[in-house]
Image (cartoon, rainbow over all chains, first blue to last red; front, side):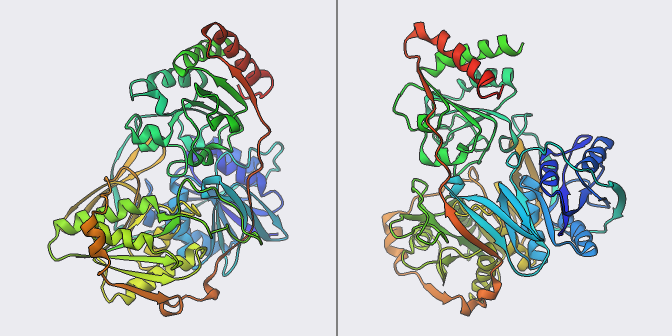
Length: 319
Length: 262
């Protein structure tokens, strides 16, 4: 049985969903959790019901917001004290930045953004996409422990009947010292919605959107079905949407339940970034567009006519 | 200023990937190699910083195969002064790569004031090397940078996080900065630049020269495979305006009752 520490980010009073996905998959291992900052009651309950034995709530100066140095130093102490075999977390903005730093501090190996894993005895076996999902490979970590792993949000899925743990909450104080790179200000993004990489539903627009203003019709559809809006590289390079919205090999790799591609032809680098979506709907005037080879439901038609109709139909269904 | 840029050479984004015979990597024999797209922003930012600081040099470092030195030639044609190439297989893990980059930077004899990298390489998508290299070199670093301002040794760095939000960092050199798309517009190499690049120094090193051995391997890959093909989906013709409402109604019905995602 492996001793595992799961690093968890909070989301309001609760914890991020990917943490619970990871906990569910770790059933049978000894699982502790580390949180930095305040952990609400909903979060404590969720972590315990998904198998957490000990929950370390780390607090200290210079930890009120993320910083590479602050977070990595604070976690290093907890990891060392607990003699963990594995440290696992979500492949979020923070996870992606933090975990390689921790692995460097321990001279240890790390598997990035796995989409599935299991333990054989206490050995980790992961699967991860490479080339933005054009291929997959099995991944193992060698060398000194602890080993570090980040997991792509929405890939494992929520456990259906998780086994509970003791959920003992213990405060840990951290002294991280002075920071050389500190956040002075946070500028909010254009969208308050859930990020593309964590979105359950995505509506994406391509070059056929013709301009930035036309993305409004995608926003309206997204509003009705609770989606996040994305864009193809062609749309981003044409200036219709910011790079933060780009889906594909030089943008974000996404795996929502539903991906609606509007006016996207389906270049190989775009398909790589969204092909793991559970259900794909494509709308395009070109019946031979490559996107249709990946679509579960393809609509050969003009997005400017179809998207407003879709919005009304969804509104009737969901309203 | 001693400005360093780390670049990687990766298969072109249009590449159709095929696993190799024993499934330990992909077939690389007929691949068109390009500079990792995110590294272009790193090279450009280095050149902009050099232009603003007389007497600075831009040194480019790469770890990888030697068959094609596209990435380094491109960087020097864009304006970098010299480059170091650590010869290795194309599938080193992140830890070995970071250690080799550190070794090559030390071999250059110059102490970096700033190191630019791309935020990730688009081949293995690990997003580890910038943070690992900074940790190994005990430098502060900020990743996913879309805004860069320097005033003397003070840096203002804009890091993009979820939802397109921006964290504004203050840091000072020496520092490592990992660049994202949107930071700048990389210049094209000019013809005179390409000619000039041929005479710029390119030093080749072995992994042993930079202190990296097989004992440094931390990650082992196997069973490279293509994702399963989806069975063909359903396609509806809605070019005719009269058919549109019916098609949309049917697709929404399928999303609810067949796919059960709405």
